[in-house]
Image: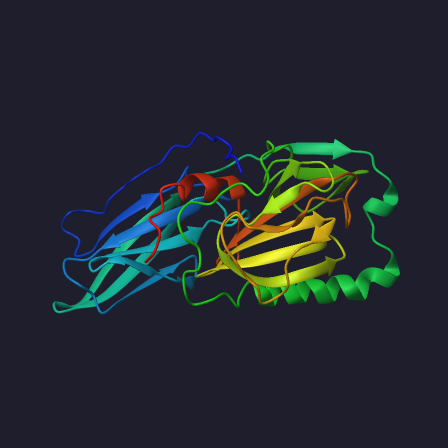
Length: 288
């Protein structure tokens, strides 16, 4: 499948040379909805590295004997400010510590106002229990990622079309404000094949009320892809997939008005722009 082309600005800001752990961050920007790849280099092979940011422990993975890396998602709802990323490492020199200040800048998302069929805004009362149940299932799923890195190398677009509905957009339907758009929409004809953005394990493959026929891939270490509104699901829960493998076909199931693919990404529970994953992880080194 041909990869789409996206522009990206990467920042690499190392910590002070005097720090026992050198820390550098790569991202398109330090803003809500962005993905940050934090690289931590210790002076000698470490027995273990731990990272805390945004009030939670962030999984890390080893790149080489002295280099570790982690993916940090800046959630769509994070407010501007400075958020410390605290690193601890065990080495022959004892316990090493360093802090990287993540300065999150404001981000303005587009707002659109639409008049739509009221049935698309307010679900029927008889669906409320299902909606609550499925929301709780997804909330738990985001916390149950594999402790191992399952993805390998750069991510690929699940379909070759250009994004039409952008991440973070706020919608006002019939005068009622709705939740911000937590993914990217790719217009595609019904039946078009959908590729796995990267390797992972299928942790959900069934119909959900809002997203219709849905496939969720666990890429490991808290990184998930959600692919929604499929006409056909081509995988089963528990399956292992590789990058580019067909997992289903584009459709218009769930609460939508036409065929397209919705791709959502979660990183440690944070809602992240899928285009950031395509760009920031473009030069990821495949793991052994």
